[in-house]
Image (cartoon, rainbow, N blue to C red):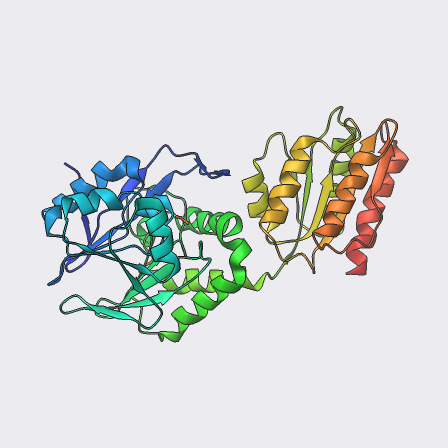
Length: 396
Ligand code: FEO
């Protein structure tokens, strides 16, 4: 039987490990996923979040290692997305008298849409719930990641149950940050923000500010709904988020492209050479080999972004269109980002030109016109591409 993990006296992790998950709505999860749920043993036995329905047996087994699930008095649903609320009906079946709390009005509305009327108690920022020795405080964090999100703060244990905020898609046998490879954990936190939270950076900034407002001694643990529990690196993840939400860019470049007969690729390589010659670290990312969610992980911090496509049937290649659509949906703060469209063509430069239009629509600074080469780039044209990069960098 699976066991709970005690994270504080009378507080347990009772979540599930999805070791083999490799995709989460279009985002590659090479390190798997965790669905974290937490059990507080107080006068009212309280479960915070559940798990994806396919992991309900794992959740119930871990709860059962501490207490009979029928004894659960309170279920707090910090977020309605089914990776966290999916096992709610099963918990209600096992504990018919448990009271369910979620945010008002969106949480109540969305829980009802997903699971029918289970008699939800709507709570708002500032509302509290006494469960015995502990009084839990609710703070609504709409759009981090859905309109219904909220976080729950337990002042007695100094724990913030933050749901999607501060999460990482990362499955591990160790529950705490300091028991894991922190380079990998911080990388996964960065990728998670880039692909999940980034469109809602204003709301994420407000959430981080609210956490800071609790005071420097108010947090022993941040317990997200995905990934490791922050214990030794609480300040590090808060600072990382403050950097993420600022949209601050680094003097780095990424050259993203797809190619048919290597002409666009030759230009891409010349552009990377140009950045390196100018002292700017640069990364080459072929969209045939790099998933768009990994490209966005790199893209998020780069001041310089070059996007290349040849022309195919009067359009850019579908891989490049897919990347640009995904990028625009994540609404990165592009106003300070320097863009460049490039590519090759046979009889009309429509592919590279359409990339340029997309970058313009996405708000990039475009100081140089689209660099389009007919058929195969000559040595002179590749030198021109390197020189173009030198001008871009010198102008900044
Ligand atoms: Fe982890 Fe928005 O769900």
